[in-house]
Amino acid sequence: AQKGKNESWGKIAVAAVMSAVILSSPMPSYADGQTKEFKLPPIDFKDKSRCTLSSSAIGQANAARDKLYDLRECKLSGEKATGFDLSGVIMTKTDVSKVDFKEAYFSKGYLRDSNFDGADFTNAIVDRASFQGSSLRGAIFANAVLTGTSFKDADVENADFTEAYIGDFDIRNLCKNPTLKGENSVTGADTRLSAGCSVK
Image 1 (cartoon, rainbow, N blue to C red):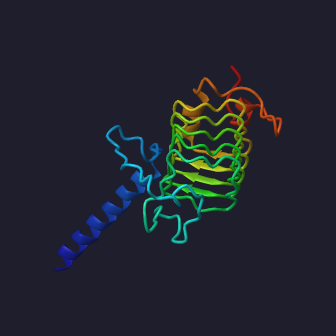
Image 2: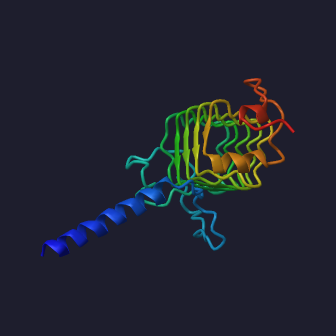
């Protein structure tokens, strides 16, 4: 019996070590919505209250909401969403240019092919989100946390990433973005230098 017990503890110890190795490995954290087969449901244009920036009351850990948070094709330029929990939001062809997203939460956000020009993400937390194909010209990400977040094919010219936390895998991809250039008109920060990328 003691032998069997020792073998069981041995298996548990091995499993614990394997888990630690896997969790500590520098694997890239892919943004939600990057899967090619990812399919979105039809837009409910009958819902007249759909195009509203609202904070989740449930909590951002798993982007949980009582219904789909769909802001596709909405016009919300210049709105204020300071400190909002916008986790799980879906945006395509959405105009959120010049929106105040300071200290907002974007966990598992699908933020593709939208207009974020001049938006302010200062002190925001953007986790496992995808800005693929979006325009972020002049956006401010000062002191923001950007983990597992994709800027693939996004236009980040004149954006400011000063003191932003960006994972190693994500920063390597961001530095390869040809639009990572210019100077932010609000903060005066050099875009490429603010992201910590070497000057070409």
